[in-house]
Amino acid sequence: MPRLTSRHGTTSPLIWCAAIICAIISIVVIIGGILVFVGYMVIHPRVPIISVTDAHLDFLKYDIVGVLQTQLTIVIRVDNHNAKAHALFDETEFKLSYDGKLIAILKAPEFEVVKEKSMFLPYLVQSYPIPLNPTLMQAVDYAVKQDVITFELKGGSKTRWRVGPLGSVKFECNLSCELKFRPSDHSYIPSPCTSSHKH
Image (cartoon, rainbow, N blue to C red; front, side, top):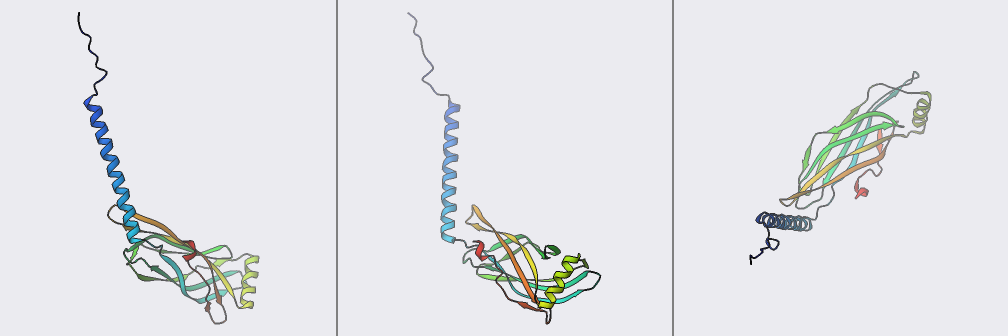
């Protein structure tokens, strides 16, 4: 009698090759994850801090027509407290406004802060003549009489640094604070303005 042979017990070489390739890829991914984790633990990256360290009201003028002109000097400090990694910053942008009305946009090109160092970003902010509605005119007049005028500064920067050879850590440093000045002598009234609470 003729014998019947079955092929159900054999596995195609293509299936074996695919299984081996998948296993190799899985091992590589696992090893890569371990290396990134170890690098993160070794470097233990700390989020850089952006803060306003000094400012000055260089010029402030408004007239009865309702036009405001101002010039400010704002110094922003960037601190990289990481002991083993340089930090790269890009898309750095801050918006300066008065009572919700945009005055100027402060930008900086991509820059790097080396490990355990700081960098200062000095901005000279000169606004174009800004028309004020009656409500804003009253607000400016009241601020001058009280000898305290307040501007809002909002914005931040995207930062990243490498963790070993296989990856990088990314964070955003954001500022949202008020800058207060005395119109009588143009001095800056220091107040907390930092991204450190965003950790």
